[in-house]
Amino acid sequence: MSWLKRNNQGNLLEAGMEKFEGRSTVMESELSALIWPMQACSSLGYMKVIFEGDNLGILKYIKDEAYSFRCQHLVNSFIAWKSRFLSTSFVHVHRQNNSSADLLAKKSIISPTDWSLFQS
Image (cartoon, rainbow, N blue to C red; front, side):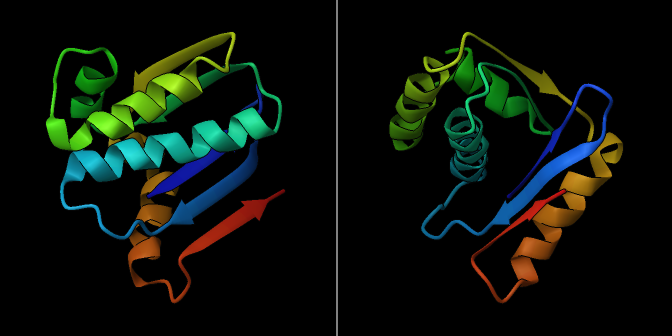
């Protein structure tokens, strides 16, 4: 899992990657991957945030168009974190158009650490 944060000019402010143990489905991993940057943005005081991701399936879960008993606790966590913001939007971005996040996600698989955070 990886995430990037950019300012309004598109400059990279922060990026992170993390390994999640105990996730047995792609959707569990994707939801976990969304919750982490929500927590980070909330703790930094951001109130209006646009989250981007390359998994179309996750949009169905966060729009309440899909249900999985296995993922419901993560959906509930997502809802709780979402309520901390004044404004949020969730946008699909093709993987090819977000190569930095894709590279970080792939690096997290082989990384000797469980997480890394990069700031500029």
